[in-house]
Amino acid sequence: MLLKLWLYGYCVGTPTSRKVARATFEDVAFRWLATDQHPSYSALARFRERNLGNFHPLFLRVLKFCQEAYLIGGTRMALDGTKVKASASKHRAMSHGKMLERETRLDEESRKSIEEYFRKVAENDAEEDRRFGKGNNPYNAIPGVKTAADRREKIRKAIEALEERERQKAKEAGKTEAAPVDPKTQYNFTDPESRIMPDGANRGAFVRAHNCQARVDEKVQIIVAAEAVQAPQDQRQLVPMTEMTIENLGIWPEEILSDAGYFSAAQIREVARRGMEVYCPPETGRKAEREACPRGRPSDDETFTQRMGRKVRSEEGRKHYRRRKCIVEPVFGQIKQGRGLRQFLTRGLRKIRGEWRLIALTHSLTKLYRAQFG
Image (cartoon, rainbow, N blue to C red; front, side):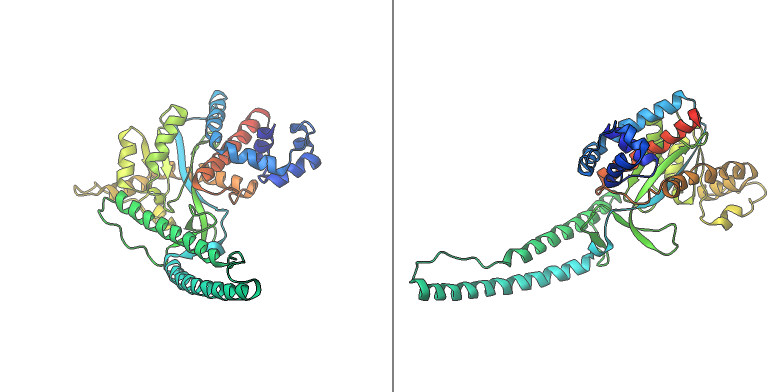
């Protein structure tokens, strides 16, 4: 019953536990699904929290239903990413440089607090000896000392997390030593696994968010693969999302469309090696997409980037590539604008992935419903 309430809630843009709990009283559909029972918002929240890891098998089951209903063509698919705001306050973030400065200050405050502590202890002991006689009163601790130590420990763990992040980056890049942490690199204490990313809706603005990937089939815009990542760029996501699509569906798409953010010679070559046609422009911007295709025979020293640019700008390439914006971009509009799902309600990458798949599977459920009964 709780699962039905959550699925319907996400389908109609009611993703919070308090709203779902209230809807079981006020909304006929929710009341019917709940069989006139009224679970508390805390019970609903606990159910979602505990079962976020189970939404991927449910996502695959919905895909199976869509395949059986012949709603997945499998021929042409488009890939794109969207930034979804994290449940993290920007006021709970601190830069690496600021953390080092605060740690030093807390160390100094702690030293002074300890000195003040023992001074007050000595004063208390002298006062107690005067009032009660020497050695007759129990030791009284002075409150407030541990608080600064707790703050210092929390900041120290955040600094170590940022340094470990740099070591992981160096390891992935094949370097033996990690670069020093940029003093401006921020750590958010509300959701440490979120990242600062450019806000696509407001040019020049940045938000604390997660990068949500979606592979969408052309036929009726079913999401066939969904993933959330921390990297603000999409450049390394083409191969993982292709592998996830094959694993989810058991079929190999014939054609993959993606924007210039995914352009990577190594990634495109890997996908093409498996027999899939990739259309991905090397340059960003409308001018690059509209630029005329070079005429004449390609030169012998033509690079992979030039070859892909020629492919996308050709008459045949334009015909294929222009379908991208009609396949995947409306899906994000339907999710964000249509259902109002613009911010995650959970925290931590593991939970975010579960919630993103819940959003994706309810999107596909609405497509399945409309195809059958719409």
